Length: 241
Picture 1 (cartoon, rainbow, N blue to C red):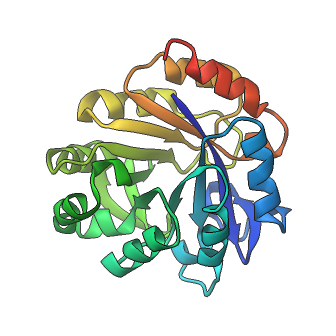
Picture 2: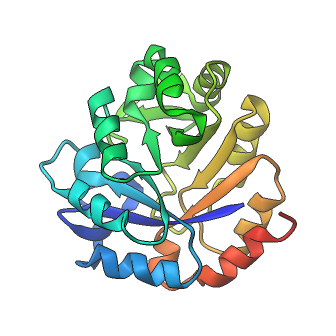
């Protein structure tokens, strides 16, 4: 299982938003490259980079940060505001290893097969961000009325391999990841699920590792608040791999 340290970028700074609310922001650093290097030195092989400005439709230059991060010794999973094929191509051109499709996949699932054919299933992860089990889009600001499991099944049938699942009510809240919903999504869709939102303790990483079909875990606030040691999280995630 892979541990993905999160770098949420807003106005060029590393921040965390509580439950995706732009008004509940904590700034952790104004030097994303320095933060990335810290996680790489702790053993990270992937970074989960989110362009919050893109997700919230705010002007930004975070793609330049992506380009700089791509020069480091780490693979990058990049998302936030990728709503057209041109956006996705630009992210790959800037150095992303894999892109996260949220709003685009939820609102235009008919485009997904062509994207898989163009870039490959290893390069695409679909974000199934949910509140009360229902998918939300546009930076978690709009409800779709479709369940994460229903959309996950539909996309898996199209050839999608990876899904990022976030219970947005827990994101940044340090209330614990929704292990039951994450495991159920993996079990019922067959997708390789990446867990996100509210991870607080190493015991949750172990529980997710043992749940089956969990590809990885995104760590955000717990890392930045010093509640989880990244090197130990990576060690535990790899047991039995």
